[in-house]
Length: 212
Image 1: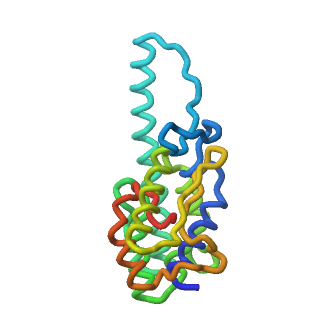
Image 2: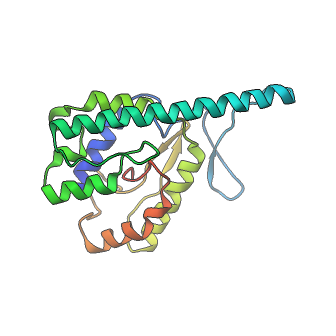
Image 3: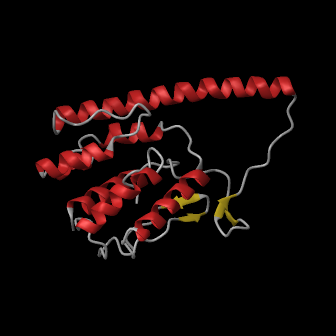
């Protein structure tokens, strides 16, 4: 198993450990649109007066800002833990609060230390990472799915023919990628894969890098 495969597997294992994560929604199952692209069903809305709607919107904006701040602060605590226990060079999170996996993977490749892409040796910083993940602001599941789908199509267009599409299942986004992660069919260390990854990286929304 390659370093990138191990780091992705470790990352997904940590994500699974926290309920109600970034790639889930409370809106129910998936539907098919006229274009054949799966979509997440929308929850029914309630009638509101104009003043009530405006007040709700203002409250939502305030809650969103507080949520982003709490997420960033929690992520910084994870970063500080990694710097203390694993490597002083562990990179800052992005301004959005999401970890910068491009820099993390680069640092891991330079040092050969697999613990950098995990939550530290023997999960030394797993509690801090799980705390940060539990505070991530709600995501738009439909947009996440469409972003991953565009990325998968891009990867295939750039020569990684076995790269699979993501799936919407029970309101969750299941990432695409290698059809057999346990016994990889895609060589992630190959020049072709690296070139495709570079060409398609902008297809993924912030926070989805490294998920497929």
